[in-house]
Image (cartoon, rainbow, N blue to C red; front, side, top):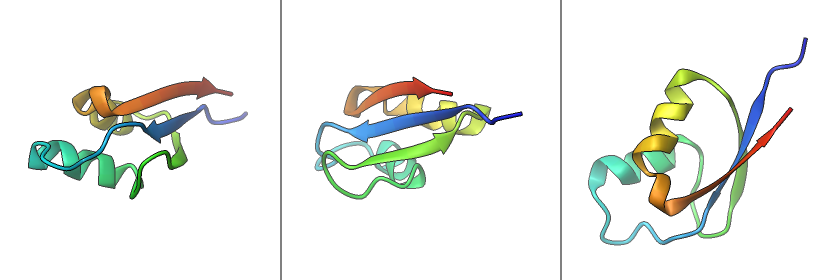
Length: 62
């Protein structure tokens, strides 16, 4: 059994964004522009992605 993962990339700057959205992006492990991280596909991570969707690019992987 493999856990489903998501590749999340920060494509827009966090400068001047709503603090809660910045916190969600940092909570996903993203620190700088064009950085990509793999996170486990959980409802918690999906919620953070949905909140700051306009700054992120999402790729689903197995």
